[in-house]
Structure formats: structure tokens, C-alpha cells
Image (cartoon, rainbow, N blue to C red; front, side, top):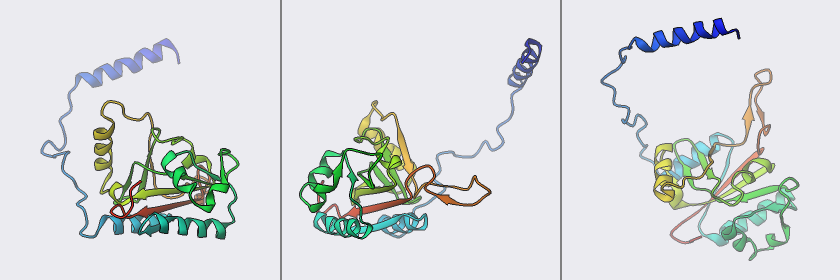
Length: 215
């Protein structure tokens, strides 16, 4: 870009900034929630929205049922390498037959298991942050992602999720906050939907009843 062209653009910007433009809808309250919660339970709404986006949801009464379902899933899928770095979840895994399948090789694993910050029922999203152990990578690079969540982690919308993290972390917000909504998918190539191009092809969410099980 020549200096003359650059100066012309800057003049246009300065001129535009000097002319005030009236706000088109001055009476609009930006704080109004236009998405009122439905009358159904958050668990049901999350399960419906998550499943609609090709996620696979399972509700577990307690930790015992959680690992019964996980062991059955691993056997059916014939997975042999499980990646998990979150201490609380690894402690639980070490009490099961799945302990022998744990690996530190994220790139070579069959599935990764993580926790989460929140589950957003209105969008069916899993909220992950870099504050979790290997939170940046575990849910992206593995071909299959399994999230273990507790009922109390359910929130209605994104705003509530962000507010809860502000209360939790104060001024030390994680450097990365990710809202994962179903398996990775894109339609960039000839407008054909392709799943698993930029992330896992399958995403599972196991929700454990918080009143009967504590992490």
C-alpha cells in the first residue's frame, strides 16, 4: 500500500469518527435475557441438545455405575489406550480394570477422559479450560473425547457459566476457555458436512448424580 493510499484511508476513518451516529434502538436493554429457561429440568434439556448435536449422553446414579458403563463401552469399542491426566479421575480409574489401559501418549491414544467446568443445557455444550490438567489438548487431539461431569456443574446458559468461572477464579481466569458443542464438524469442503476434521469424531458425556457421588 502506498503512503498516499494509506493517508486517504486514514482521512476517511477520521471523518467517519467525527460524525456521530445515532443509536438505532436507544430503548433496548442489552441485559435482558431473550432466552428464558424452559420448564423442564436442566439435565433433560442438556441431554436433548447434546444428543441432537451428535453427542452421546449417559446418566449415572453413582460412580460405580459410571465405571460399569465405561468398562462396557471400552470393551465394545476395543480401546486399548486411555489418556487421562486429571488426578481425581485417574484415582477413580486406578480402582477399576481400566487402570491397565492408561497411557501418557496423547497422540497415540484411542480416547481421552476429562472433567469439565460446566455443562450448558441451552446449547448442549461442555465447558473446558486450561486450568484443567492438559485441558488445552486432551479434548482436541484424541480421536474420541469422554467428559465426566457432576449434576451440580449444570448451568442454563453461557452467561451463567462465565459468571460462575469469574466467581471461582476471580482475577486469575484461565487463559483458555472452550465451549465444545458435539463432535468436531465442518462443511467447508463442497458444503458437505464432515465430522472429526478438527477434533474428536465422537464425544461422550457421562453425568453422575451429585447427591450420591462426590468427586
